[in-house]
Amino acid sequence: MLKIVPDPPLHSKTANHSLEDLLVQTAEYLVCALTIAQQSVLMHTKPTGQVMTLATMHEIESARSLVEIALSRVQSRH
Image (tube, rainbow, N blue to C red; front, side, top):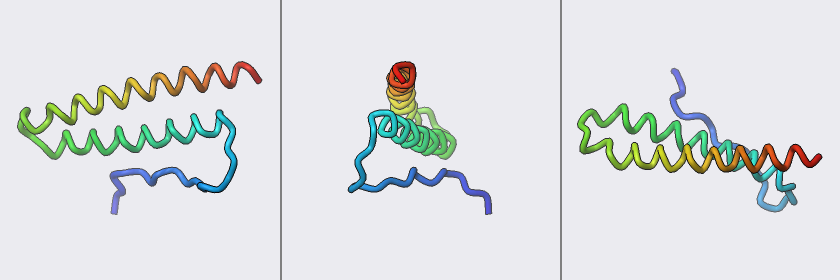
């Protein structure tokens, strides 16, 4: 069976993470959220059912872009 939605990233709530690790993990969660939203758009064939999901996808993509910028800045400091 083909898996449509990727597994969420693994994490430990007790471990101390670096800022870089947290940004990478956040980016992975945003990829999962975007995949779910994309599948939701495909399931709703009428535009009225897609409007909120498309808006959500736009916000997720914007957040992911900001995380990627922050991650590149953190990596450039090392």
